[in-house]
Amino acid sequence: MSRRTTVLLADDHTIVAEGIASLLEPEYDLVGRVHNGRELLRVAEELSPDVIVSDISMPLLNGIDALRQLRQRDPACRVVFLTVHADVSYVAEAFRAGAAGYVLKQSAAEELRLAIRTVMEGHIYLTPLIPRDRLDDLLRADAADDALGVGLTPREREVLQLLAEGRAVKEIASILTISPRTVEFHKYNLMEKLGLHSTAELTQFAIKHGIVSV
Image (spheres, rainbow, N blue to C red):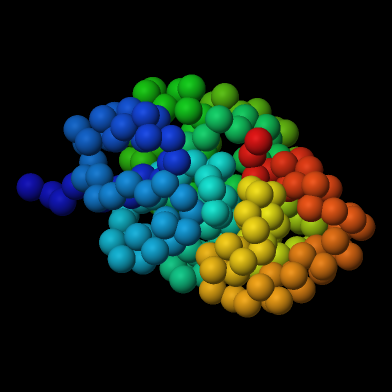
C-alpha cells in the first residue's frame, strides 16, 4: 500500500481548522495544525510535510511572507493557500511568492482535495472562481505593481505586520529575537520609505496592502 500524502494545516480559526481537518483526514495524513505564520515555519521544518495548506491572513506572520521564508529554506516546498481572499492581487502575490495552489474557503469541500492531488502531481492549481485572464495580466506586470511590492525587506514586512497588530516594541523585539532599538530602527525606516508619520498610518498601509487583516 502506498504512503499517504502528509499535510500540515495552518489556520488561526479553530473551528475552520477542525472543518478542514475532517475534510482532509479520509484521504491524507494530517501531521499537524498550527495557528500562526511563525509556528508554521517552525513546524514545517520539523515535519517536512508533502503539502502545506495555509490561510493567508494569520497573526505574527502572514501566509505569503511565511511562504517566502519557507521557499528560501526549501525551494521545492508545496503550499496550497486556502483563503477568503478572492481579490486577484492576493492571488498574483501568492503565486509570485511560490504558491502551488489557491483555493477559496467557500469551495473547499469541492476543491481542496483535488488541489492537493494536483500539486502532488507537479502541477499548479487555481480555483475556477478566479478569473484567469486577469491573473495572467497581473503576473506579467512588473513586480513593483504587485500587492506587497513596495520595496520593503522581509524584516521590515515582519515588523510592519506586528506593529499593525498593535504589539509593543518590546514584544516585537522578543518575537523577532532582536533588540527594541532595532525594532525602532525598522519602524523609522518604514515611515521614511512609505512617507508615513505614525503607527496608525502604518497600520492602515498594512491593511490596504494585505500584510495584515482587520
